[in-house]
Image: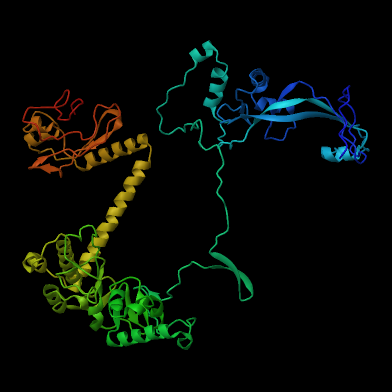
Length: 595
């Protein structure tokens, strides 16, 4: 039987007794009496170099006293910049603990002259002062206050005058200062205004566990003797050359980096041989047409074997078509029948129409059946009699166009319009009739000169619209006061330029000046097209081009600043002669005074 342990001594050892790190074998550690004093510990997340500053970041001695009185039942706020009242704090959380607070006394060590401050850890100091230090138990830590929440985003407001005033006059919660506190009103649109931060930028206090791990699909390997990453789940690349319509040349052969034909397996060789056979019969194909001419067990290899036989067009009249190497359809007009047209079919409406399944004819447009997922058709695959007549009877350009190919724009417009209308009719469950498209066929066709002139005119109009749009944006970006001054100058210049001769008709003179001439009661007087300034500086323009049964109208306006006029200002036409919806004068605007 092992010997029973010795009972504790009848008299407690003093708490200041030195520790004995090296005890004899089979001996017992000395007994120490713990004081009954209960303490609260605060785990400050900062490096404490100034105790007074650290207490200030916790709310001062007043907050710590309240914390001690409630036994850490209340919370305290940690602010790293206690002088900034706008800083979002970190709130504390209290937990029950059973720790000890020790007071360790180590003899002071004299430093040699010029020696720096001793920055060794407490453990190293204890190790060096073995046998000469004492340890005293101060008390038991029953509650620990921790700051484990994430700090919020910080916004420095030290240079804001309004924040300094709020802190100085409202921070003390003195009645007289709060009563006399006032913010001067300002309506300037030019002077900068302070942007006060919100009380909190983020509601997230606990950090997320993202469970970071390596991508299982990525493996390290060696490529040419160098380490590289290999994605095992990456989709294989097709490597088919893509040519833009602006490219002056086309590929003549497959890429040199391509794996040789002799090193391929039997299935890939079968696919390539079948592709070469099809391209010998027809030089340009769509991918859908190729799939329809392939056996099912080879269809999945077509997109990877295409690089051995053909290239593809990225844009232009032959977009998304596969062309045999060395052939440029822009060089000869006989390849115009292989041009492609594109349509977007609404899949939600196809249930009403007669759908064509994915058969060997799904790349053909016959005007009777709808291919649900078909959007690209070559003109040679259009068998609809009406469209076929337009395609075969169309005039040919003398030079290939990058947009319409060898056909004129008017011809391509007719083809696309008729096909689009027939697709919509089939999607709605209707049977399209050729008589419904007579008006499209009778549209006037353009020759090359007329088309070039029209495109030039459209380009000029487009540039003018863009210019006006940019000028309007630049004008709206200016302050309201500057914009109003420029508008007044423009109005004065327009009045000087449009000054009428003295021999004007008296009746017209009265109408323009807003007098009692004919029609003044109905239209409110004034000159149509002038700019009218309403309450709050909002602007409305009477546009003579907005007509309603031959009478002028008023264009919509946004809400005025005082809220009395909102949305559409009104219609000058909905009133009989002599009526006025305005509050006074002879104007016809709703909700405000007359013009």
